[in-house]
Image (tube, rainbow, N blue to C red; front, side):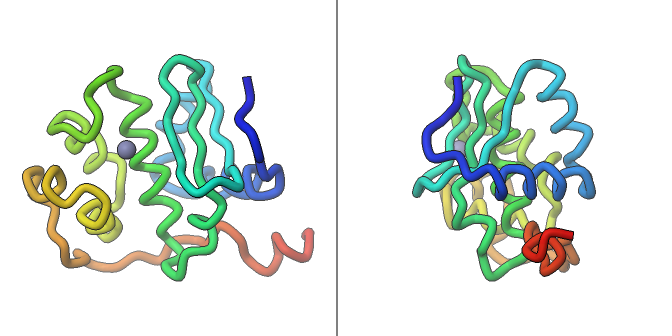
Length: 143
Ligand SMILES: [Zn+2]
């Protein structure tokens, strides 16, 4: 089972990028449990619990914040580690906050303002990050 409109280049780039960040251990655990992560040319991403598929929309990789992709991946991983049905509830937010660097958590308040606020996530960015962009010049040139 593979989603439609997979962008192979961006999917490979995402997996390379995950290898360099704190979420890598969780990624490895998910892969060991049969999960697959794809970048797709679709507007929205999703986490399919039965098929064990996570999709990340391609636009995420081109966001002006070079770390944004990591926020998005942390959000989807927080779904994958949970149970079917605990979508964006308190348990979800607890998992998300463990996975996502603090400096990226404020993005959750744009997506799920009430749930995020209830979990104590601030609308204002906390601290800063220097996260490797998913695509750098070397990737694009093919080195
Ligand atoms: Zn979600």
